[in-house]
Length: 152
Image (cartoon, rainbow, N blue to C red; front, top):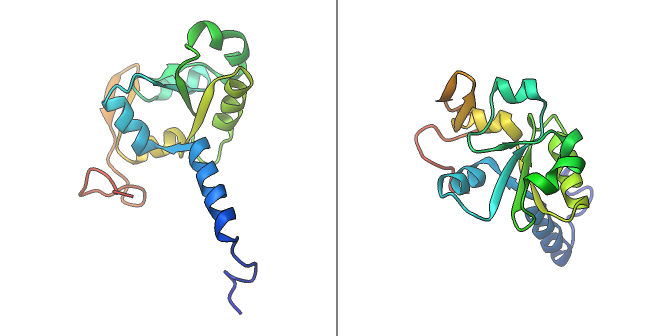
């Protein structure tokens, strides 16, 4: 018996609903990079980490609003018509999920950026810190090194 099919796959309609729903809640670093490069006016990227983490490095153009301050400061800092994209450290951290929940509670449309800052940096996108903006080498385990995107 197959380990994969020991629990049968979901029915097609359920799979369509599930994967469609996931895409409405999540985005990836490549799509965020494309929107930032195109200066998509309807999207704002929010780094939900601490001041120390922000200073260590962040996405250029992101807004810094730690999760603990969202409830008190978001409405004054972030226009409600924007789609908020939250991120934190990476896939081992649920800070972006917590931040997305806070924005959703305030009535914002929100998505979580999969991979967080870790995958942003590992895929070779620009990183800003007090010393300036730079790119780290692409990690061949997370990004195509000979192409602009993975085209997935």
